[in-house]
Image 1 (cartoon, protein in one colour):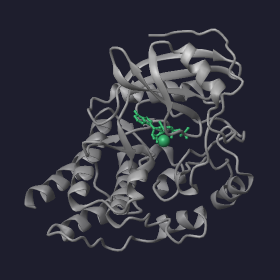
Image 2 (cartoon, helix red, strand yellow):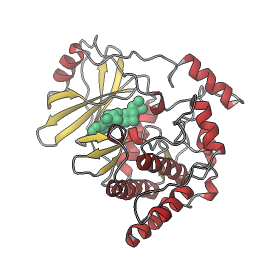
Image 3 (tube, helix red, strand yellow):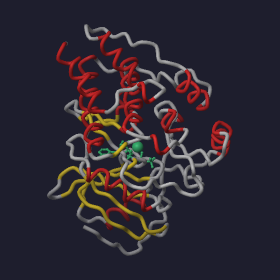
Image 4 (tube, protein in one colour):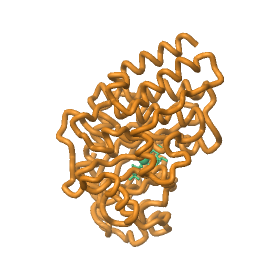
Length: 338
Ligand SMILES: Nc1ncnc2c1ncn2[C@@H]1O[C@H](COP(=O)(O)OP(=O)(O)OP(=O)(O)O)[C@@H](O)[C@H]1O
Ligand SMILES: [Mg+2]
């Protein structure tokens, strides 16, 4: 379904609110010295499009425009926002609870197309379904919009503010997110940005994987914008092969490391590579050089879980399980032995 809207007054449309440094995914500029260029990024504070985003909540003009442009939605409200997206919740007559995402025009349309394709190609119940896609003309340019199934709940990042997950929550998280990643692997898609900001816990305690914004389709030519020979990543979750952007060795083992680190964080309540680090460069050095201390959990499966998480978080990908499906069956053995 494709809809086109006329230009309306969108003077108040503003994108993005500041997020914690820890949640930022970044594009280091192309340069032989990764650390130096990354430092350059940090000092300029510029994002992937090279433009600094304004940091305001949508104002009344935005709401007036959204309401008149999307008459099929009622009760529209601002939800969590990404740096390049405005995200609203709303009610649709036949689809029920939905979210509406309006993508900033500076985003590469091919990247957005691939994000949509990824969600559509993965046969899973653990990723919110895309219900409709379209384009809307606005005074700041033509924006792509996406309407998708709304997950009513909180992000894992929000949940972690209340402390580590309980053992039961940890097992549910472990099983369900691994299932989402295994389903992605079957579709030859690597998510590449698994972290608590991109996982939601619904009000029934089930987990959902969001945000395929930087996912990679292994069967498609990589998108490498000329100005960004290095790919996008989040320090502390991305494995060395990803932040060094060795494209031809990226596979689902990149997601296994990010998943293992997220699991570890959920278990102890803090990000093991970021905690106490002076800056993102130190975080990257830790990922490359330090093995995480063994996990110790208050349950009988502590030893076997710790073995699995150690394997998943190995800095060398050939020391991690070969596939998500392998990790899944290892995890299942631990669940069965509980
Ligand atoms: N289907 C959904 N249901 C409920 N909330 C959602 C859904 N999708 C997104 N959100 C909320 O919106 C936030 C941002 O969404 P998303 O992760 O897709 O954007 P983003 O890609 O991180 O943006 P950017 O990377 O440009 O900063 C999420 O962290 C979550 O709080
Ligand atoms: Mg996100």
